[in-house]
Length: 117
Image 1: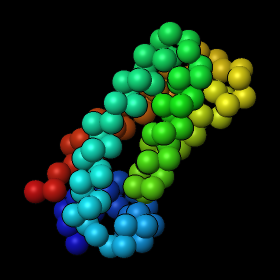
Image 2: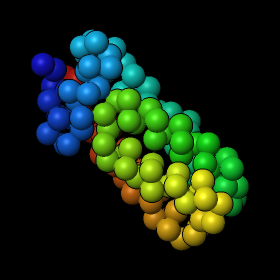
Image 3: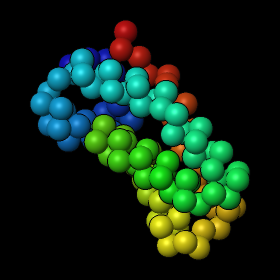
Image 4: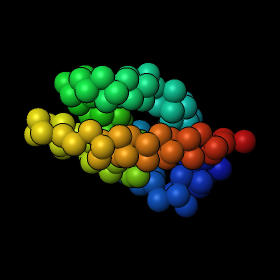
């Protein structure tokens, strides 16, 4: 088992589910994980929230939530859900959304510290 997989599992990620979805291909997982952490949807979400463009914010948050779920990144998935649901309802509270976004970025930055080395 790779160091990255071990680190993520210890961090609370659903690595069994993620590995099942990727047919146990740890190299593919590491590649997808790295690409996810650089995903432009993180910045797009922040910009959309700042602009109060709830449609664009929903699209970016929904995208991040889906990829995080597939990668087993439980914390980002949950934070994504906290963003998606009020945006879906059409009655978001900007203050709450910005707080969830800050937590999402903090978690992404934590994950960036995990290495394959």
